[in-house]
Image 1 (cartoon, rainbow, N blue to C red):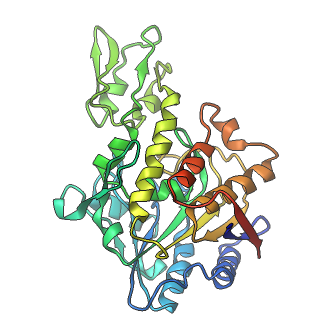
Image 2 (image 1 turned 120 degrees about the vertical axis):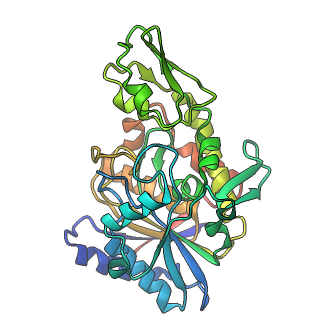
Length: 355
């Protein structure tokens, strides 16, 4: 049976108010949030954006979504987990400050922001899933303990997974640092020694002390590498590179982590994808990166696989080609979707209902 995915176009919408009006119509018509019973605590999983990046979903849009949850009697809060890599989202205190700077305040969104400190044992949980690559997933407890989950995702490209949508927002985004490391650990940079000029920038920026200079050449200790790709970003000669074939395992692990998050959330989860400001790379980048597609619209569903597949199809249709493959030739983003269906996360077949 096909899953339902609701879609409303925003390609001719320029104002925030206009888009919010369409978002309200989408939520009213799709009824994807009506599963939330009264007095349920609802975690709204969102990416607050890295410093210097403006591609994230606008806080004013979150107000519409959280108001809709409140109208059902639910009590929403916004949340995300901390990152592996160096930046403003590395720890809860700085992450929260950045969220406020990006206007994810109670005044604008109507709800609190909670970013648990996953260095504290009481904020983490292990979920047994016994899948091919991940046997037990390390997750931020708040996403498991809450009554319901709503993932609000910015649909865009990604260097390791081809694209990022609901599955990435949940699978990668709800994991602890240890969980993120488990998903990335097959991705360690390799050094072209003939290109390396020994500047040491990679050693300075590495948050895991995995890069050292030996005889004025960089070397990577793969056992320490967390796969953040910071060294690639600062290398002036492109001496650092990643074996992008490892992206396949990252996609599979990410799907398995999404399964862990949603294991006890059957009929208790909703997904909203914003296919707007579609950038080449993730919102984790500390600067805006190139747009690769026009604004498409907003999608809503209770199936994470279907909503990502529909988003993928709509963007590529508008571009006349697989724009994500064009942006990242080494990756095939369909692998995450096919595997997610295989392990029971949702359906590739969907019915698109345009509003």
